Amino acid sequence: MPTSPPIRIEVVTAFLKEQSAPEDGRYAFSYTITLRNDGEQPAKLMSRHWIITDANGKVEEVRGDGVVGEQPLLNPGQGFRYSSGAVLDTPVGTMQGSYRMRAADGQQFEAAIPTFRLAVPGLLH
Image (cartoon, rainbow, N blue to C red):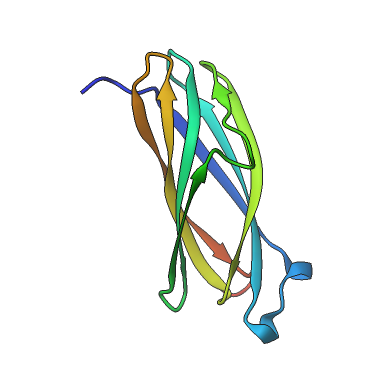
């Protein structure tokens, strides 16, 4: 199997109190993702696949082209950062998934998005 360009993914999350309504079971979160191409050839982000799970075990899958309306091309050493959001029915949940990437040589590969937690601050110790 050919070596795929290593894509490093970092995530920062935040609880959006002003967009949440806990009394109605609505908890809004933002997440900022930074992708970095640590490989030796350019790679283009083609699509995304998210698995969002709330504390009740409800799972939502989201698939789509690109991210925030873009299909960024990451040259070696280059990064791309974007922010998006998710709304859960519970104050805690997780997200994970993958990006489908296409390397300059035409090879497609998956860049795994590690599981990260969405949680209202102060709720977990």
